[in-house]
Amino acid sequence: QLADANAGYDAVLIAAGGNDILRRTPYGDLRDALEAVITRARQVAPLVIVVNSGNVGGAPLFGWPLCILLSRRSLQVRRIFVQTCRRLRARFVNLTFAPRRDPFGRQAGCQCSITSCRDASPRHSFTSGR
Image (cartoon, rainbow, N blue to C red; front, side, top):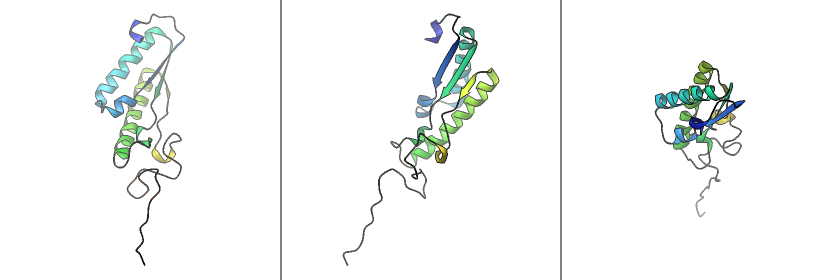
């Protein structure tokens, strides 16, 4: 859509990152693509706003250890967005937070780690027949 846009817009909003986290887009490729999109958006509007995805690892769909890997990747992608937006003077709206601070993530009190619950289901305990 942006490739065909003409100048004259007040702002361009770019929402990206989620699929790149899931599809394991190489970080350098992601940085290059984000730079190209922001540069093109600057030709169309004076205000460019970039919004990243939430912490993908916080989705209840992904159990341990995948949730940890996806959370790490989400935070690394956020760093790329922050650096690229700062360098190209685009506004950045952050939606990716560390798991313990993520308002969009798992149920309260249920973190994805080896030592805490691995999913939102209750733990079952087994007792002997005595």
